[in-house]
Length: 170
Image 1 (cartoon, rainbow, N blue to C red):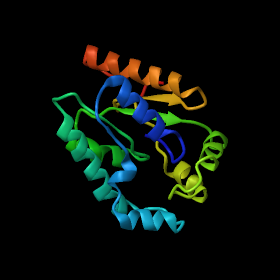
Image 2: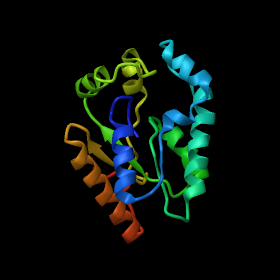
Image 3: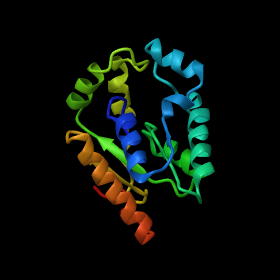
C-alpha cells in the first residue's frame, strides 16, 4: 500500500517473486471509468473506489488457503483496507512510505502513467497510516528496492511462521 509513485508495482512484483506467489497489480483491477477519471486529473471518490477494492479483496480471497498472493493497492484509508479485509480477512499490508519530495521525484520518472503527478497532494491528504491494530508494517521507500523487498519478505515470513503480526509496527 502507499501513495501513487511509492513503488508499489515494482516492490510488489519483486516481493511476489521472492515469496513465489502470484502477483496482481491494482491498476489492472480499475474499471475503465476510474482510469479515465484519474487520467483527466480528477481524484477518485469512495464510490469509485468501492468496486475496485472489492475486486482486490476477492482476488486475495481466491488465493487464501493456497500459496497466497501479493497485490498492489494504494489502500490509503483504513476504511479501504477494511473493505479488502471483508473479503480477505488474513490480508496483511506493507506500507511503502516516503516523503512527498521522494515520491514526487519517483512520479516524475514514470512518464505516461495514467495517474498524474498533480493528484499526489490529494493522495497524501487522504493517507491514513496503519493503525496499531492492523496487520502490517511500514517500510521506507528511500532505500534500494532489494532492501525494501528483503524487509517486507522478512516481516511477512515472521508473521506467517509465528502466526502473529506487529499491528502496524515500523
